[in-house]
Length: 151
Image 1 (cartoon, rainbow, N blue to C red):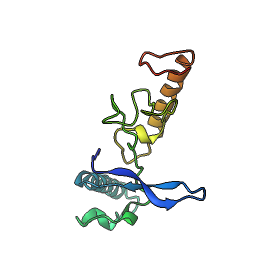
Image 2: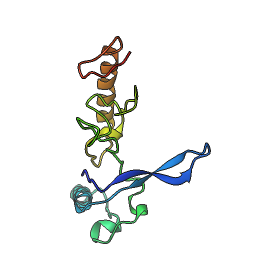
Image 3: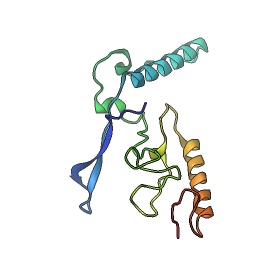
Image 4: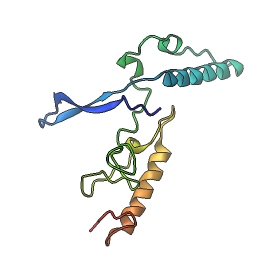
């Protein structure tokens, strides 16, 4: 779920070119744990019902202890760091996925998806990319209806 306490920050660590790396400060709320637990229970019940095997969920699903970063490796896709909003005070991109304050920079990936699910958001990302491509094509010769100059 969207959580105003979560952040993408610049880390003190640097890449080989000297640029600071991104660091995710992801705050997990109880709803994420409940959702993952519900999904794991559904998979377990269905496998047992169909006699297809045994399923054992991760240990963090069954307790309320604070999650460690290693508990979440490889199972969640961080989405929404480029929040879509009508204005730059509350968001990073506008309805056309143009980054506020940066000319001709657009986002078309999971970063602009409002909420994440348990499955990969590939179809949503493709739809957003297709919408952005249509917008860029339409506005290649001047201003579009939202006033983003594309010339």
